[in-house]
Image 1 (cartoon, one colour):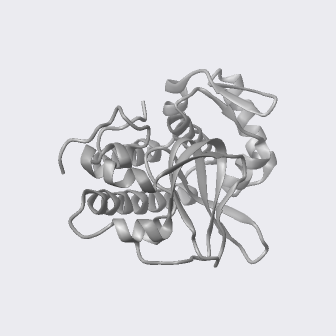
Image 2: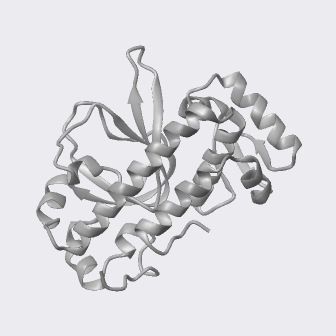
Length: 240
């Protein structure tokens, strides 16, 4: 794949494409705002659009028989919401929502199907992203099984900070507990410890990261592994 135009668009998948490939796709890309808890696709409902986030964070969720939502992955400006469309699916049992407000470029699912053909740069980068997302979900499953709530919380905060490219972002204990699949009380205890350690501050539904190095030292190795795999498979990153 030829060199991309990384400074021209704030989405790593699109930025990795050659300029002529991006120009070909531009007529199909619509800029939109992403609102908090906006539903991007729903369980067993045909996926109408795919989204290339520019700012903000989206969550891929699975639904339990008790109607509980469990996060299986987060998606920011390094990737795309709607990968099942690329893989040939029209609907899946999971759902995707906007977790932290921002913006995105939206494309109709039918347009993605017609524009992604074998041998194109977009086909190649989406194949690489498929592997990166698979690695992310696999690593997260391991993390949820063997690491503490505190380590998992630090991983989540670091990944989210990378996606929004800002040390401050909206977050409630209730929402974080839902994303981690743990009790709210457990998340609140961890947040207090992280605040007392001087790693974060939390006020009025917003978290501010004060000591990134401290969070990285407290997090498990999963954060570094996930970040390195996206860097390796997607290319030059915005996750600084």
